[in-house]
Image 1 (cartoon, rainbow, N blue to C red):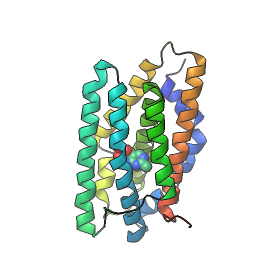
Image 2: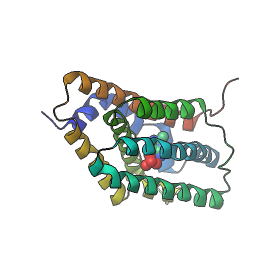
Image 3: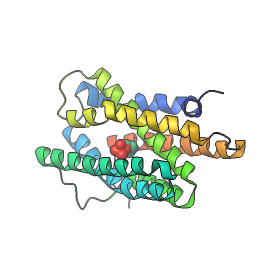
Image 4: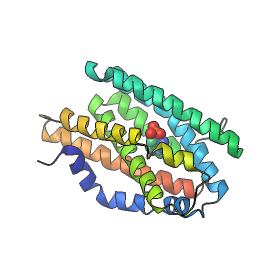
Length: 216
Ligand code: MP5
């Protein structure tokens, strides 16, 4: 059998295609993205990263002993990432605190937290792999198509660094090991979770390009 993480990517292929061709990524790469659009993505992604900390903390609590120190590292990396947002917010004049999460941002975070709380370690780990792999591939696509030096270079660098690539590889390889000897029913559940996380990631780019407000 193919590695499980490759299997997941294969079945999510059409969603991935839609993600990598999203207008937000294209406009960021060719420099036509408006400052307001990018800044409001920053506000929403800051909330996402901030709330990813409790998500990871739940996974840490459920993690096998040999993975604990890696999860502590992941938490520390997220904390550093918040500083990257704050530094860029200062440079570009973006308000980060007291921002309401958009409906999509809110729902996505709730999905992650609920799955991590109520599901198995493997459920949450599959979501983590999906979310990080989308960001790696999305920002790699931006980097590949970059026309000019971007004002948002720090973000491009953050999710295309070799450290981040190694981290995503580590997640994929560990996922392959963790699913060994899991019954088919369990694997099917993980595949469904992976599709849902990919769909939320698509919605997140869509939201970034459009309305962040609740309609009522
Ligand atoms: C990530 C992110 C990557 N920042 N935002 C979304 C919507 N999905 C994935 O996670 P991290 O923790 O910033 O690497």
